[in-house]
Length: 253
Ligand code: 6PG
Image (cartoon, helix red, strand yellow):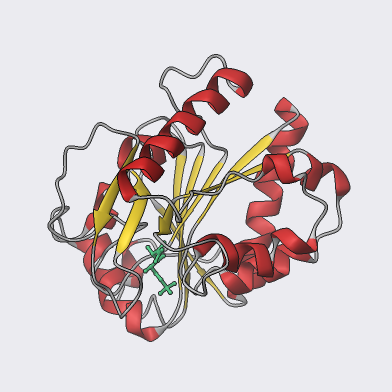
């Protein structure tokens, strides 16, 4: 398993978007298709806007889009992760509607989780027949980080050993919708490139704790490890990186 690579970006959204576009373009060149798991939260929205300005029909036509987690609200609700990504990215590019696989936040929690697990399984069978597990090996997984160390909807204190690919959870965080559905570490950890996107001084403690301590129960982002042979990258802005020990490796790309 490879160590995480930490990059401190000067122009967070532009540099992060360029990295994802490059990864996805490489996947399309090599395999004719690319898959990305989008993150919820506010941090990636600027990145999505920059990506939306990238004009490359072959990229958007062959891209398949998933989510790492969703809040249990309808797709037009202001709290919907799907809605945020649709407004900032998906409605701006020529991506086929059939390539967008949203988590159905309007369903009861367990039903939404089972529905998504089945769609991951069916996608893997159709597009990635060599996949060893009943879920895709995603090209790019984007993840955020909460001030409490959560990522996707894996919250502090939640069980460590989860085998199911998609689960329903309840968690209160900053007044956001508490009912949620999330992919789990076995799925995230299989990806070819797992990438945390973290900006802002309010995340500096969580970044430092996650990268420098060892407590995956309290710091769920530590459960994300590239165990499938892929790469794990942390993309930070200067503020989010300010508590890191710079002598220990964080570097500019
Ligand atoms: C969600 C998330 C969650 C998010 C973090 C960071 O649905 O809320 O996917 O894990 O990424 O809470 O959110 P911010 O980027 O808004 O700080």
